Image 1 (cartoon, rainbow, N blue to C red):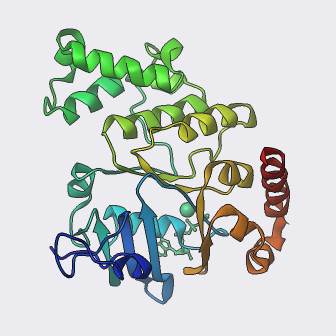
Image 2 (image 1 turned 60 degrees about the horizontal axis):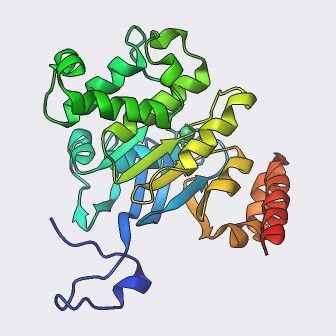
Length: 288
Ligand SMILES: Nc1ncnc2c1ncn2[C@@H]1O[C@H](COP(=O)(O)OP(=O)(O)OP(=O)(O)O)[C@@H](O)[C@H]1O
Ligand SMILES: [Mg+2]
């Protein structure tokens, strides 16, 4: 394991602990990631730092390489080139489960849940696994007060208390997506990677999901992939724009909103980014 190079700006400072130790608040750092699928370069020298406590959005048109980047970060794919650091440790060659154990958890773009289990059972299983109780989750549900309490707390936080005893298959789609995020949080992540959490959710349920994600504890650093620009601009304090596998730019929402290259990328995809930028700008103006 080697130490992370960190951000060039941050790494120019030196830690009091010793010469050469980079000072950086970067929790997760992708350095020059290249992923080739045959002739297709899905990510092209992507460098991205997720700061501690981040509310960071990764945006870009369809096929830009966003999901590929998450697959590289989580170890589903091995990069053709480049390195990944989690809290200063090189995790580039670690298996997905080893990364989860180190605090990096994802949700998937496609809904993946156990249909016959209830939300309470699903969460109890995850919480008890997290506590090393493994397959004895059904015992834990009755006997382990801490497992039941933590599961009920997550159900309440994600507005799932009323549905906790129903089989997951009868849940509305928006509730299923809330459950997915609750499962991810039950794994006690320090880094949470969300790949399109509102994809396919009816418009009436998006707001609830959006507010719940935004209100997650500050110690959870979040990277969010999202096409819905209203959600992106209300959520993100930092944004990275990916186009054709390459980072076009990174900045705070104001910088991204005023970047003519970003607007040009989205012009062919309707005026959604312009509308969202206007709304975000208006909200900021009101706040001042
Ligand atoms: N397993 C794979 N094999 C071959 N090509 C792939 C594979 N996965 C992704 N690609 C290609 O890599 C490119 C990036 O795809 P990716 O799914 O990462 O884009 P995305 O930004 O997540 O898009 P979307 O917004 O539609 O989800 C696309 O050209 C895609 O066809
Ligand atoms: Mg994708």
